[in-house]
Length: 301
Length: 301
Image 1 (tube, chains in turn brown, orange):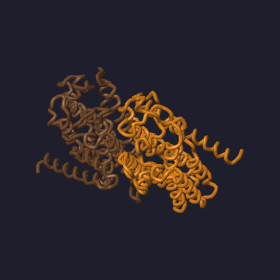
Image 2 (cartoon, rainbow over the protein chains, first blue to last red):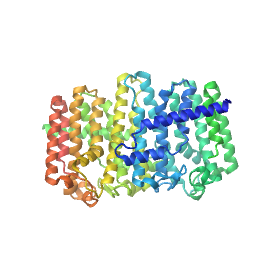
Image 3 (cartoon, chains in turn yellow, orange):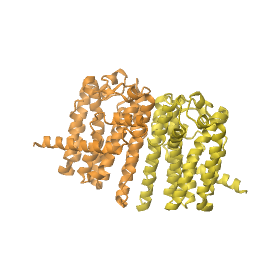
Image 4 (cartoon, rainbow over the protein chains, first blue to last red):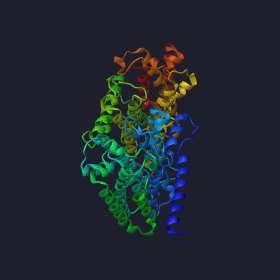
């Protein structure tokens, strides 16, 4: 098998393990009250690419961590990502009918249940992170607390939520290049960075390793959003699985709007270079992280 | 000072410490992005009686716990309670304009910010619980994780969220007495019980003490909701600080509707008796818990 095929096979295996762990971390669809569990599972198993869980597992692997220590965070970041999509799509927010090629949660279950499904995923993410085996002691308990606090920070008002507030407030207004970067570092970058940093913590990273991964995380968080903006401006809804050209229609702050298409593409390429450079001290164990960086920047939808 | 006055003074002191701790646990109103922090603080400091934090502190005190170990949970339960009120009041849910005598969050800040303010409080609650001093070890770390997982369970789909789903689904329909109890044990009882149980865990309770407090918690959780239903049916909006008679107007499942006013009042009294009996093995250290039980059942608004 070629190295590229081998890493694709590894990713597919990891993705299946994440899905199995997510399934086990949630109440069954038939659990009381059924409506909410149907709604939660509808969005969580809607064909997400599991990029965030993969970043957790890849970062942990890069510092020699064991998968069993990493899976709870891998699940938690996907739950938090999914909750944020459900709430962002609501009529009061971005009012989106389509997500990953399927009707959005509120279109299927109504607004009330969609709000509660988001709440449930956010709550479950933290609950899963804090359930630990009885025989755990000392450092393992501390790492789990540390990674959970980091996740809370990334999902909070200086991260995900703050970015969404700034996004709402910038609609239809001109935004400066520094403000745009701030917006996206909060809205998208913070959670992506928490995946990498959290994976490093749970994997038992040394200080020098953490520094490398922090640089990688910062570069990839921003690159991800730039590529998102480029795709929104250039791809059709069919490829995106969501409404296309919506950013322009809503006069959203985007890299394409502020810097133009070509410059945005070039920025993403530069950030990829930065990310790969940051990984080099970690050696071959960081191969999966490097591969994911390429995928993020070179994806088409 | 009479014993009753002394306990009132103690409650007032504890309430101020909770407010100070809540203030310290949140970003300043001027922190970026300001809108969300204004909205969060608007609801959190809207004159809540801090019953849930008091239950945490009283339960911890009943088993000899230190206040510094209890305050993070005291703050977290109030944040989660406040988030649930903000989301429940949304137009897509109960559509309430008035809460604690003030316009509801979405009336002041709009729906999008109200949804995000709830999300922010929920997130911050868990973040606060998982931030621990560097020098903590072993049992203290484990207790914190355990109390946080318990809180997640109470706030999740078998607790707070599940109760709200059932509440929405029972509007305008007849509900059996067992289903009504299930609804309220989830919607109100689970979080109140988590206050008592979580306080016991953080306070280092022994198994026998935990059992007493579990019985107390179960009785008070239900009593609280029954009294709420009685008040909704009998008091004016001015006293309640929220829209009165709304349960009947929305054909909500209530104890008054299912059992009638007199029987509902009698049930609350019986549950108070059960709660006080459960406390007796704990001796004088449970005085504050006993006082809070009286207040819950004998309150007028």
